Image 1 (cartoon, each protein chain N blue to C red):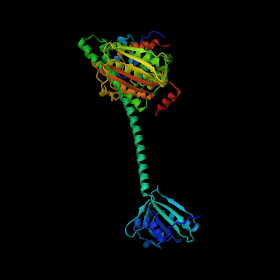
Image 2 (cartoon, rainbow over the protein chains, first blue to last red; image 1 turned 120 degrees about the horizontal axis):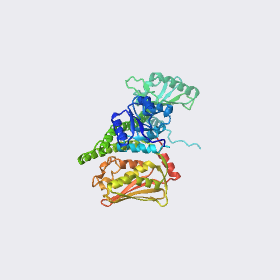
Image 3 (cartoon, one colour; image 1 turned 90 degrees about the vertical axis):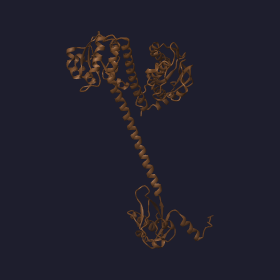
Image 4 (cartoon, rainbow over the protein chains, first blue to last red; image 1 turned 90 degrees about the horizontal axis):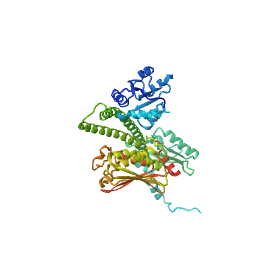
Length: 128
Length: 398
């Protein structure tokens, strides 16, 4: 386990979902969150925020989640940053593909907002 | 010793020739017609006396006449036979006819020299129009069937893609609905009174039902279309039963049903998809709980048979009415439980379970007595070499 999970960078283009996840992670989970509605802004701002974990939607206009992660990981300081995808595409082959794209785990949408923070904590605790 | 026929009367031979269902024409070295049988007369409307000593050009009009004449010459000059089969081309034999009656047939023509010293040759014409028409019709039906199959495959792919897209598109707004209700219900944004809680619970439960429906429809479509991949491997029956029981325990506590698991004394391996078989057992166990009285026990155990393992889910609940027995695996079939605890059912669970069991070359069945309970059986072939091969053959991706 790298260190205590505190700061999460969250990219989600759906503002409603973003608002729910923000409450679930901040108010319920006690995490600190920085949200973005597109991957480009997240790539530009990540160095200023220095998150412990990235939480990414998959299908987004402009640059999608996997491509955003790929760009972020090109920055040496974030080469190994843990990332979790959140997606409504939950078929096993789709989940496997996301894992192959470098995600440590995949959370299915819809998610239980009261359990979201716990799920992320468990994933974090299982990190090598 | 050579046998001689008793038919040597010319009249009898003429009668035989007249009754034949082929056109017979005899031609001489100048390709003038010397004989024209009754079949030719009746088909063409041209009488024998009208064509005798006429060259073949006066009677037949056809671009293929050159080919026919070539074959006739070879028969007369070199004694060679020929067969001109045009049955499957557009070749039609047309006759000139001064009575405005035309013979247009799809012919099969046989040309052969007469076996004497007359230098005459025989042209036999068979009308294969009906056979060719039939052949063409069959080809066209086969072609249409092929096109129909292609269209059906395209439609099936379109349906799969549509279901996957709709499922994804429905999940996005549902994430916001379930998320908002979940936070409200969880009291994250403030407390609410009992009536508000009740309404929130109704909304939340029905949102989850909608999600189950979307998931089930996607599952069903993928299994039916064969686009879902089954991850077959050797799996331990006892592991499967233990996992199924621990997975349902929370639900059991919630609805006041006890699940009792009995493991196999000598564990057995079956060849299957672990998660999909768990899905089947989860469905059977939750159904058993829904249709049992609070405080009752649902049993889960297995019995080894010669070629398969029988997994049994047994309840002492309300039982399945006769009227439902024949349609129980149909999509959207739902039986009302006595206390409406099946309100979260989609009516797709058993349809999916049956499809999954079928993919394992297995069998699902049940016995039920009203008021006494229901026992569901799932037979899964044991992981023998022959069973593994059969399952692999049956599950080749399309």
